[in-house]
Image: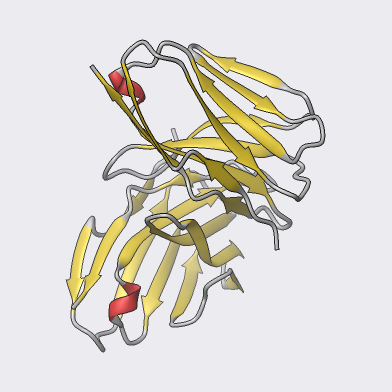
Length: 112
Length: 110
């Protein structure tokens, strides 16, 4: 079974802090994704990576950056956290040209 | 911009009832997926539909892809409390990406 793990289930940070969210997948998938999930808005794509060191902006990249130094690991970085970044963050992976995505359990981030 | 609209947003029913969730768009999708998400967990893929008019069954769940590949439905027969969760439809975009609907929260009461 594909396993996607995220570094924290719950995180509380202060406004202006730098925040790192880590995601690791164990199925050698090429594609990895970061989404945020807010009530009534569904999942919105923040960033996408289709290979090591490759990244592509999603629909809402402002205020975020990403890093993919190893195939299995995809990090989301909030350079200076703001209260409007309080949300559930979901990481996902998929293989090759497949659209079937496998999700981690999510990190609920609160910025105060 | 491709958008997917799901309805209803929220559904609360008694155990044993039937229900249908709809996912509609003005765009054509090459494939469409349905996911279920339980509280505190990430979404889990239920099914992928690819062909217009396709019907797939997964035990008490029936998924249909519209003939024009712009819409889909999920029908649950004799709902059980274990069906409770958030149901999300997702359409394929270029570059292995998905666009998600806002979701339908289903609560099945025993």
